[in-house]
Length: 305
Image (tube, rainbow, N blue to C red; front, side):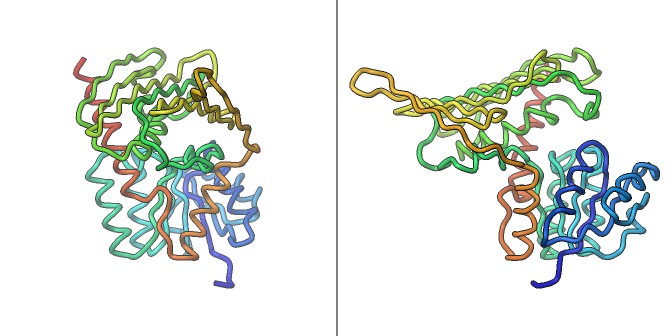
């Protein structure tokens, strides 16, 4: 395709403005419009990137692709509208508020032969992109995702806000059905659960212990994989990987520092490539649904405590 893809961003709050920035800098794209229910915000971002600023999606001209970066409870309504109009859709995680909505979006994308991709941004971290996912099955996984409190994204609990990143990665790594799940957590600064821990047991014997907090005093995004012959520590924030193994009774270690990369730019470039080459996204609708299903199970387990 020689012509540029016409793109738009719906919802240009904190994260959405960065989606607009990435589309605007890609040679393959033309950022046609941004949409936000706050007209002033839409105009401010539009002026920055020299495009249309709209306050209602019905006024959106025909485009090829959109990013849906509205609050979670609006994902289904906005994404389904865009798919019905024939747009390819990148919807931020979680894919929707519930599984029925996720199924509807997947079916709508299939029926319209459009790309539906879910914005699980951590999948585009340089550490994960460099890993051989299928080399060995982890026997035990431990993950910690901690952030200081921020007032945005408090419309959902910490499971759907933060933990779902690690849930998605773990489900992809283990590639097996969750057969047992236990969770505990508590609200701290909001009406939703702000800190949570979940233990997942899989049909193939793997176990994952997952912790997420949005009321920490520090930022930490780490995952540790315990494999049959080695231990691997991933630091998503530092974009580094450490591998330890037993060599003749001595522990050897190798640390790899990856070049700092722009995960959001990589994600949006991948989305565009999938459209241009008619290929399946790294995080298709089905993967987003799988992560959502497990996240909902964890949330339900928290509510029963």
